[in-house]
Length: 179
Image (cartoon, rainbow, N blue to C red; front, top):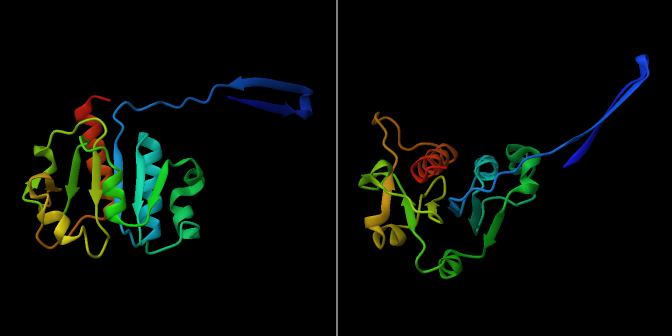
């Protein structure tokens, strides 16, 4: 809640009003996991999306930029300070921090099933790899059953931009969860 004061000096009025700024708690509890992201503008855009959807952003180091990078903050605009972002020193540390029963969904161009075949659960962890390498091969090999692709209908495209891919996956999860 904040107070908005408008002064109309030329006609001698002062208008004071209280505006209730609404924030909505999202019951889906989606977690977006970026494994070794390299491009700050993509991460900033994804952070903004996480704020808009009430999702938590997990960043797995090493990062290809500093969290203070102006390009990251530019893409996240003035929203970055409000993003629920957590950083982990490596993938193993992060994997150990996830509740054992939490749903883990991996996204890769190498996925054999498309994301529309998946049923999302509240609290899901959606994993995305770095822009140039994707997710580690060992992670994909040990999680083939829960690795999905986003359908592409033109073979000239190698992959969809990671920020777009995250947006597609997060909003599909929200659609399914009825939020």
